[in-house]
Image 1 (cartoon, rainbow, N blue to C red):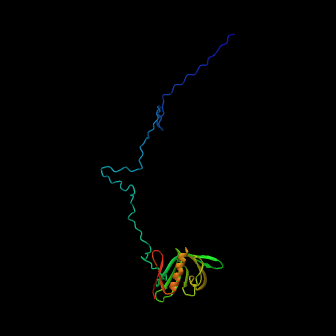
Image 2: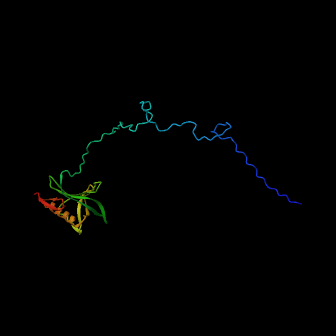
Image 3: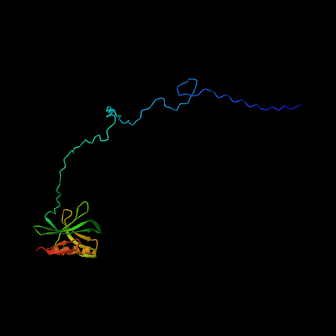
Length: 216
């Protein structure tokens, strides 16, 4: 019996349809692709005015300088100048230099950093030592300068002394420690104290070197 070989026959390709896809929403039987918008959209940016001088759209957009004429007046009128009374108006400054102050209360505690001054009253001639804290200007040392106050050196730039302090509103005997930046400034302070008690005015030049002028 003879064998029969069967050769598979490839199916013929279907013919490409001649129909195309048109714009969405339309069915005409012929379809075509369209990538153009059906309606023209408005640009958000306003087009410049033409040469015809059309001013009909002037108020369509807010002006950049709109509101420049608005002015707000203060509710409460502030005074032009406030006079600050420090209590030093009737005193003459004989000495002033930056220092750090400590107070002894069972242990040494820092009381403030600022300018320590020697002041002399213009009428009575009374002397006092005054020191205010930096920035807040609160008084941290305020005592009458009298010969009974003895300054003892703790080291080259620090003086120990007792004084009847009035910085807290009442007179209290306190133990203080006044420290300066270096030995030279500490000696200048002690020299200013001695000359103030002797009735002399201390003047400082540009180089911060003291010299005295007799005012008696």
